[in-house]
Length: 302
Image (cartoon, rainbow, N blue to C red):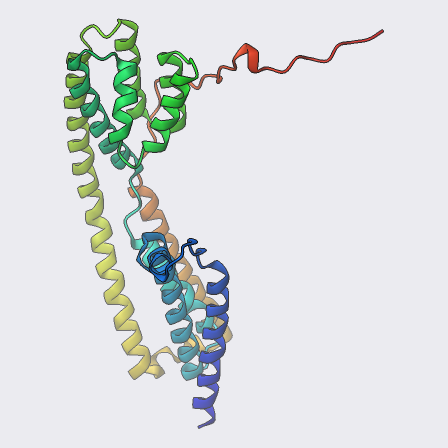
């Protein structure tokens, strides 16, 4: 009875601490007159759902860790189980592929420009009109590009500044082709953009195939990890005498070493499956400052 009450108190205390910390890290609610906007910003929005899911995972892991520590008498489980339970989904999840998403957005943008150029517009005018249909990923950068063009930047300067902000080898290839077409006065720009769109499609097809091959080892490791965790949990619950040596001080150190080594191997595997950064073809250029915008220097008096 005393063990059960201690476990219950530990679970309540740990859960309360997690909820308090989660309350401080909850995304702020969007200001609005109705409760529907608050519910949408906190619950229905993707960042709100992701934050809430992570905190519920941590809360569940803390509860399981406290219960396991009280049942086995291993104080290390109160820390080890939350770390493993919260960290494993992050380590085994597919990493975000920025190059693939950026290339898809650039493909849509290039095809929009290619459809606007045959109407007699220049590349600068096509960029201004095409910003209305810009993909969400690069829409802020394209709006900044249009603002620079309106601020009397040349099309080459604005495109090179956009390349520095996107910081991608694929974006450099697209923007360099647009800059060359703009230097020729738009001659053959439609043909250039059509060929560029075809090249982007080939690059997208290759990236998707590479991402599919990289996902296979992650899927196998995820299955092995889940099976291993379930088997160890069942063995610990129904065959505790087999794990009795881990209850000693040396056994706790050994357990911590084994779990750390396994998590380290998963981190190494995740790092191996990450795409390698490609060398850019456009070097970073200083942002031009208009002469009238620069403040006059102080005069020296003798």
